[in-house]
Image (tube, rainbow, N blue to C red):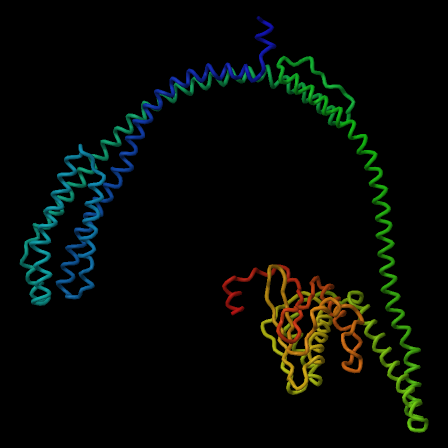
Length: 532
């Protein structure tokens, strides 16, 4: 029997037995408390739901009566209908407040009901005997006659209304005070029950603390000490499970020991895997460094190759031009054609090398990012392309943002985009180029659109590849590197670029640039207004 009482019970069973005993005691007190609380709630509800609103409605009723008297006097003096508004509004307010008070009354509230009826009767009599005759006098005889009638009327009739309203206020206040006294009495009974319940809870809490200390706190502390030793690195230490009286804690200690064994096994595997991962990371780091060196060498090679090819190419081009000028017309027609081919090839090779040199310099020779006003950049671009644009070309932009970047590169970007729009114009159609910008989250979306010959959808990705041309060399000049330079500049500034193929005519190129750090979010209303 003793063994059953001390070791056979689980921790949950022991706590349940203690809580059951305390629950029976608290249940009895709860019934008593429920009765006292119900009485207290009824009394408090009576104060809040009836007494308070009824008192406010009574005050509003007095105000409505005074407003009627004031409106009558004002209308009698001025004869203007707007001065009659207090009288009419006061009648409506009076009826509403009387209806509200009646809805709050109970069958036993005879005194308040009688006072309310007295106020209603006196107010109706005053309107019939005083107010309405005065209003009729104003309408038929004018304000002078109405004022004389007001001076002749005895004010004691309205004073009786005031007295009846005051009596109604006193009756309502007495009703509210009675409800408050009942609530206070019920609250006292409830407090006594709560004190008894607190004593029961306190005794139960003390017994529960003693039980938890002996059956939970001390065994858990002992188990925690062993777990800390394991956590400190002694994963081979066995967790002792023989010193716990509760079956729950014995099971917990056994589970912890099994977890320790599993962790020790997996830790050995993790250590082996970590060594392998470290070796792989070293290999990846070595390959990344090698790739960085390779990219740097390739960029240096492109720059050096482009630069070193300039000198022999200039000599070839110069001597070919000398041959062309010296022997032009002296040789046969085929010789002049060969010399012309050589000069043209040398010049195109120079342009290709210069473009390749400019392409390799993007992002490698930097002046640092600054705040760049794109409106100023477009002004410079328009000046540079003025000769190519002619008098009929139209380049439009407005309200472009200020972004962070390198101004020379951004100028080159717009020179290439606007220059392409001027180059690929439609015959006999004046070119119209529009540059616009809109903000979306943390980036600016900038659009360059023209009314030229456009780009087919199948070439949407090809146009941004270096040295890719969509037309024959004799149709349009250039090396086919312009849009590749544009793409590299955009990506160097942290943006992206694409061709909009859903336009009815011309070409439409979009690209993004990051918003200046610290810039405020735009107001949605302002954004809609700007879009409109």
